[in-house]
Amino acid sequence: MNKTRKSLLNAITSVLLSLINGLTSIIVIQKIIEIYGSDFNGLNSTVNQLINMLLVVEGGFTLAISVSLFAPLTNDDFDLINRILSASEKIFKKIGWLFLLLGTIVTIIASILIKSNLPYTIIFLSFYMMVVSTFINLYFSTKYRIVLQTDLKEYIINLFQAFFLVISQLIILFVISIEANMLYIRFVMMMSAVMTSVSIIIYVKRRYSQLSFSEIPDFEGIKGTKDVFVQKITSVLYGAFPMIFISMTVGTKFASVYIVYNNIFSLVKSIIYSVVNAPRIGFGRIISEKDKKYVYKVFSLYEFSILTILMYALLCLAVLIRPFMNLYTRNMADQNYNNQVLIIIMILVMFFEVIHIPSGNIINMAGKFKIGKRIQTIAAICLIGMMLVFNIFYGFYGILFAILCTAILLAVLEIGYIYKVFFQMPLKAFLTPVLKMTLFCFFVFYFQNNICSFEINNFFNLFCYGLLVALINGGLLLLYIFIFEKNKFLSILAYTKGVFNKK
Image (tube, rainbow, N blue to C red; front, top):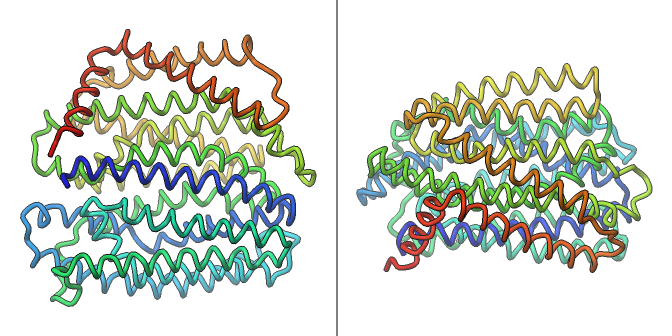
């Protein structure tokens, strides 16, 4: 199977995983809040984000090792591949023990600092079960994941995750239905993660017999780890720190409000990320094999496709989010979940978060880790500083505004570097299609929201209305692209046709 088809399969399975994860999470979270309350839901989300924050100890080695394997994979140099993988095994064993130590310390401290009415035992065990499952993943299975990712077989990982996710969520719904102890929910999540790791290990051992993790390790072959580490810190801070900060400053109930909205947006973002990130390893291979002129041609089509998908998603989301939340939270009485300001901020955050991801992928896949380090360092400093300051004056909304400002900053820096420095192209090539499509989508949203809005009383009506909105918006965007971006439209069609025609 060629790399283009592998990337396509990665995208399809990643979208499938995102849909399953997002939809089941929406259902499970609603039931958790109704049975166990917003406090436990906020704690659940805080646990997940704190573990993500602790994963900074991974140091970006996964990305650095993947990039280091591009050249030997292209040349079928299995001697070098095995030496790099042997080094990765030693690295991740050390990282695993470090994570377990830090996880234990942080769990003890966080269980005291988190503002929650839940018993200390519930908080502590919720954290520690997640620490244990993540330790198992780092210590035993991460090196096997790298093999699949570098060989463009992330679809295998996605399928394993989807399978165990469905099983675990069904069990969790049963646990909720009998109103069992809430710790069983965390235990099921832990076992799902462990079983996914075990399955990946077994698969790689059976399918990659030519690989060895016992050769003389080549640590010198893994380059850019210090620079990638800074990127990892910023990524973790940006993704996890807001939730933890909310839980520690304004409480887990506010964290629950944030996570309910964030889950809706995360579902949509994760689907887009699945498409955005699926070709990233393929871009690494293209950059190592082709000239920049060819890379830019492919990148421009890739970026425009992502822009179109993003604007379509935001347009539908902006129209449907309020009626959905009114229905979804109608039985949640312990906290006010009707928050229009939060919706506006999160739509803007999503736009700026996604729009720069293609540029960020090129920076990493081209091995420009020092550039990524500088950009991410600036963003990390700004994020922490703004959250501390804005929280004092504006509380919950100050934290959200800090996230928005950081997303804008990252977009400006990464897109600016890719166009002005890496490809040496004018920013107009990026800004013109973005501004035109944004303006078009704004007018469509205004018309649908203010002139063609309907009263929605149940989920069936919402589904029918959502289907109608999705079809109309999809048709309008396709018409817009065909009229105003016809050359790109035809080029994307030709490229897609070529993918399916390759043997």
